[in-house]
Every structure is written in structure tokens, then in C-alpha cells.
Image 1 (cartoon, one colour):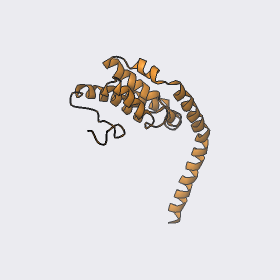
Image 2 (cartoon, rainbow, N blue to C red; image 1 turned 135 degrees about the horizontal axis):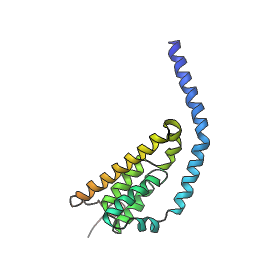
Image 3 (cartoon, rainbow, N blue to C red; image 1 turned 180 degrees about the vertical axis):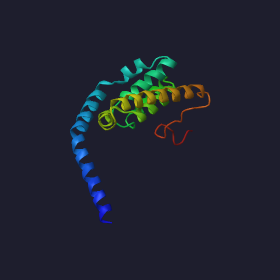
Image 4 (cartoon, rainbow, N blue to C red; image 1 turned 120 degrees about the vertical axis):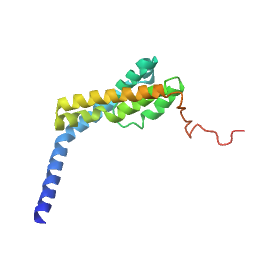
Length: 156
């Protein structure tokens, strides 16, 4: 029992030391990510996402480099999709952004090494393109829902 408590205390101590070591890097990554997100406008995203095949690859690349959680990007994706962005590009972006996210790069490189990180990003990119292509093939079966915020209560 005493040995188990000692192991838990050692693990908590090591976790705290690692967290405090990562904290400056994490804070720098958050600041850099926020600054980058200020320069990615709807127009720039729209320019990168022209053409069906190109927009799947472009959406995957954008998903790789967009910082932060996915939630703030969903309304933008809906606006772009309403303006003609294919559902396959939306699926590719969501998949890529969820799998990678640049803010984790600093932590992953430190913990697992740069080779691991590069391979994981490459595999994630291939996966997101594959999802986009699958959605492109199934696009005739998929009709995007109208968000509840846009639905009329009494359609008379």
C-alpha cells in the first residue's frame, strides 16, 4: 500500500514538473495561434478552396494549420458551404483540424520527437483527404441539414 502511494506521488510530481516545463511553450503556442487566426480571413480561405479536388486538399491543409478548437470554425464553414463550398471540403477540414491542430505540435515534438510528429501529421493529412474523397463520392446521398438557428418556427 505504501509503495502504491509513493508511485502515485511520484507520478503527480513528475506530471507537475513536466507541466511547468511545458507552460511557457504552451503559452507561446497559444499566443502565436491567436495571432495567426487573426490573419486568416474568410476571403483567404475562399481563395484556397476553389475547384472540387483542390478544395479537398486545400481544406485539409487549412485544417492542419488552424489553431484552437474546431467550434469557432463551424459557423465559418457553414457560411462557406452555403456559398458553394462542397460538403467534401467541409468534411476534410473538420477531420484534419480535429486530428492535428498546430498548438499540440510543441508538446508532441518534445514528448515523442519530430519524426513521430511529422509522420503523424502526414498520416492525418492522408486520412482527411480520404474522408473528403469519400464524401465527394457519397455527396449525392448527403444533404446538409439546415441549422436550428436558421429554421423557421411557423413556415406559413
